[in-house]
Each structure stands twice: as structure tokens, then as C-alpha cells.
Image (cartoon, rainbow, N blue to C red; front, top):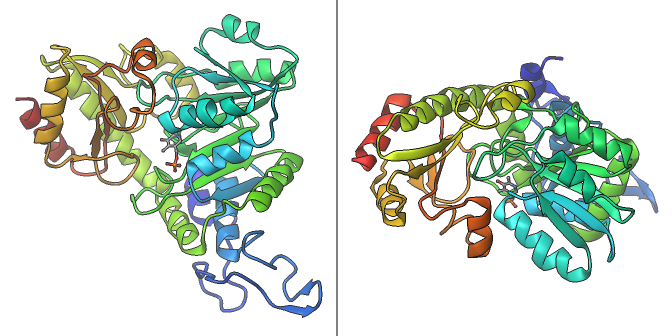
Length: 381
Ligand SMILES: *Cc1c(COP(=O)(O)O)cnc(C)c1O
């Protein structure tokens, strides 16, 4: 099955009891047993372990990422947390040095405090990365493209190294989505998503996903999820499943609009640097062409003046773009990383990785491009 068919039919079947084309929202906590320990349907006993609406979504997750097992969580961070629970004090984790703020906060302030050692490194420096691997190293965590600086990491090259050293390799695929990039096919072991973003696509649900190819690893992660409880409810599962059905259509338009917004900004005298992997000027343009099918809808940029006030006043003037955290919905959003999404990263660390006070991040939506460009032009002048 091709990807555009998988988003609609992958892992799905009609409801066996009624023939309903869409899976019903099975809003139930428990399931009847005909005799003690003998559930009427062997797959369902209690909704923390499994729920049919969530199963339908999990099958869709597995299908679109070319995995064998998908798991749906109550948030993206809950999905990440489930992976991190496999490790103990003394273990070491190597992570990309440009991460979603909440991921960095969990790594350093929750798991860092319980004795797991984290190394944050530029994953494009493969020699430096390899020099950090020792017998305690267990996991490599990568986000590509990164948030908000749109740095890329070469998944295939990293996977060669993690395989050699027998390390788990997880990729946060939230920004690219499987429409643009399939980490499991490139050698990663785990794909993580904030399904709150592009997979859900309509800014109406908080949800997360893990997808794996290895069935044993899938079982282990499902046990961790079942034993700790951060599952996605039936209604939210239904919403994400519905979102996925138009993922290919939305991503196509996000890419078209993203490219046009990036080109407009790059030619604007008030803009200094535009971070968008589709631009020839982007340091990872060649890798993006190799690893991704398109360049997505996320665009970040700084001002020629370098002034925070200019970024703030620009953001206040936008009308079609909404000033809000989050990304990946049909509507265009604008964000000031230093004051909003990345405020949890200490200022000196932000400076070090290049999140300056005049940096603005756009999640370019699927509106008419003329209205988006006119809004940017007006807010800049
Ligand atoms: C939003 C986001 C997360 C966290 O997901 P939640 O659903 O908000 O918990 C993780 N990684 C990336 C890249 C994100 O954008």
C-alpha cells in the first residue's frame, strides 16, 4: 500500500459488530468476561491495557511509520517518558544539543536528577558523538529537523554507529512526520511523535506516539505504558485517527506554503537569517534533500536589527498568524521561542545553541498563501 492510501486505510477495518466505517469511540473503561479470566473478546479486558478506538489509532501509527507496533500516549512527553523509564542510575544517554524545550527539561530535571547521565552533542559531529560512547551508553535521542533552529541530523549515518555499539536509537519525528521522513526505514529503533502537532493536525488534542519495528521492544514499551498508565483516551484517539486521514494533503500544502514564506522572508531587508531546510542557503539543505521528501512548514528567522523589541512588535501585529505555542495545525501560528516554548532552557544555554532573543518561529498553516504573505509584510512594515 502506498503512503497516501495507508493514512486512510492502514491497519483499519470496519467495526465488526455494526459495520461502522469509522471506529466508534469506545468510551468504556472495562469489558465483559464470560467466565473469570475469560473476556468475551480476548483482546480487551480493561482500557488501560487496550481499548478498541486506541487500537485502531495504534495500528494506523504502525502503518504510516512502517513499524510493527504503535502505542498512543496521553501526550508527546508521556511517550518520551515511557522510553526513558527503561534506564537506571549510571546509564548514559546521548542526545542532540537542540531539542524541544520540554524534552530537555525532562532529561535534565527529572531523569538527570535520578542518576542518568546525559550528553548533549551536535549530532553532525559524528566523531565527537562516537567519542562519548562507552559501556554505560544505552540510548541515542535525536530530533530532526530540530526545534526551533531546523538543524538536521543524518539518521542513516547515526544508525550505523548505534547498531555497531548495540545502542537504542530514538528519533522524534514530530516536525517531519512520516509523510516527509521515515526513521525506522533509515535504521532507527524507535519513532516518537507529539501527535498534538501534525498527526492530529487541528490543534484540538494533546497526544503522543511511539512506533517500533522490533516486536519484542514493542512488547516491552507496551508493558511500561500499561504499568505506569499514560494512555490516550478513546475520544482523543478518535480525533488523532481522523487527523491522520488528511496528513498527506495537509503536509503537501504545509510544504508549498512553507517554501513560499521562507523565500519571501529571505528576500526581505528587515530579516537577517531564515532557518528553513528548503533554502539553498540552509547548511543542511543537501541532507534534507537526501533524507526528506519535502521541507515542511516550520520556518524560523531573526531580524537585521537583532532586537528583541522588533520580534515582539512583529508578533503583536500579526493578524492571520496567531501568536500561540504549538505547531502543526491547519492554522498558521507564530511563536517567540526565548519567551515562550523554550523559556525553560536557561538563558546561557539558549545563547550557546543559538536561540537568540530576536528569533521568531512560524508554523505555516494551510491557508491561502497570499493572505499569509500579506500578513507578514504588514507586520514587518
Ligand atoms: C510538542 C513537542 C513535544 C512534546 O509533545 P506534547 O504533546 O506537547 O507533550 C516533543 N517534541 C517536539 C518536537 C514537539 O514539538
